[in-house]
Figure 1 (cartoon, rainbow, N blue to C red):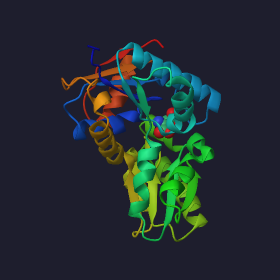
Figure 2 (tube, rainbow, N blue to C red):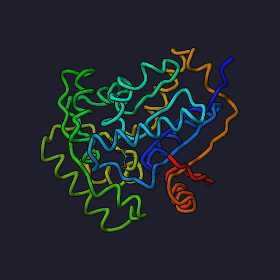
Figure 3 (cartoon, rainbow, N blue to C red):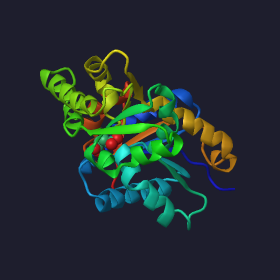
Length: 273
Ligand code: DGL
């Protein structure tokens, strides 16, 4: 019988910890192996080729650790690398699955909007890929999607500057640019793993009638549903409620900053990809 393995959760750095947190709340019984590629983060401004190569290396690392299921808990990696990995890499590896965060979010987000006008905030890479626009329109063809890249928000969060005047300035600026595209926007999706840490400021900068959607819970519910529907993959996921963390960069920094994203103490080990 094939050995069972942890569910792999990947991000360019810390951000995926916000997704892992929601997944662990929804599905606490499984083992989770988290990898943050902090040494090469952020991915947000990098080319397709680079994000693809980095993400593929990470996915192979998870497979070597015995994972059968890997979640790309990073919008940029999901936008730029997931499809190529699924099409070019997995067909020869039938027992392995790699899932992203964009499709499950796109499947649901239209339900929050009454006006059919949705704003998406994300990294330059995610926004320029048009992935959210394309995916949301597949599930909600009547919906109009407005997008806004927010390049300064990841560095603000990573540097612990979420409560500063600088954070206020950039959040207001990006929200103004988004809402200038259409006053009918009534739903704003946080399409980047870091933005939940700025959710209060984003809500405050938006008109009261706008709903802010955080993808953590959506991705967690979708994973639960996936495991129920794919019992052959579920059977390969071990269940000892363990959480193991790896980073490609300094472990002490990861432990210190990671706590902000995960909400609990982390003891990471170093991974070499
Ligand atoms: N995790 C990335 C995302 O969700 C943000 C950080 C990065 O740019 O690498 O898009």
